[in-house]
Length: 264
Image 1: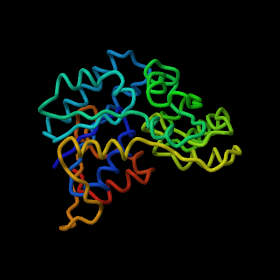
Image 2 (image 1 turned 180 degrees about the vertical axis):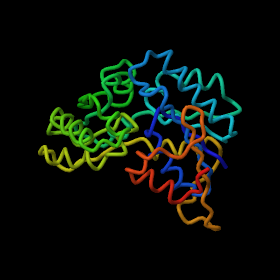
Image 3 (image 1 turned 45 degrees about the vertical axis):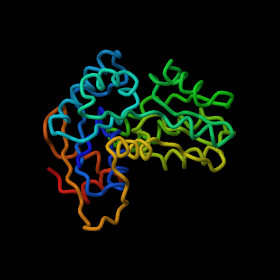
Image 4 (image 1 turned 90 degrees about the horizontal axis):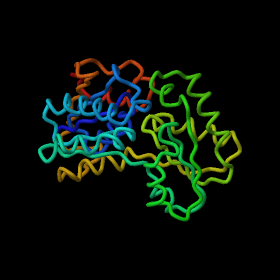
């Protein structure tokens, strides 16, 4: 079994680590686009073109399913990806976890990139899944880029600035960019230091990984497989096979993948 993931950069690590936890023996293909990142500021057609190129590079390795582990690409490229790759290769997109956050009750906030915050796409998700809820959208300029480069000081500054813009009565935070899940605990700590009560953080990685397995009719087994087999890891950087970027090792998800997998 082989599962591919696509993102401009390290935002695919949380979903990849979630797949590894659910099916440790699965081979993983991580297809990033360092030559074209960041995707967020690009025009929609340009985002689609870059996402399709990254997906086609992964598809050449014949995975069983493709995860688009990027909110921006899921907004702008899913129709093109599905038209190009399905039904031979199922494509699973990423949607911010607004629905489960709203179901928990109480005010919620959505941390997202400036390009996504206030977008018609995000407003539509709020209307569909959080109608009647008290929702605040918080833009996080520079946070995804800081996470991508594992820039500790820049991450701290961007998180602190977004925490200051977060209402103190929120009970749940939706991480509306897959990069943000890599620093979820730092976000939680900053919000607590800003005076917010304990709250629930909602990411999408676990749900996306589970949906990918469902699309190919595979049940999760968890970390204790019968044979103890661990799948391989192939990394594509703008279509070129390469080691996992050093910045990935700054995060537990990246270290887990390299520690548990033979890297090819």
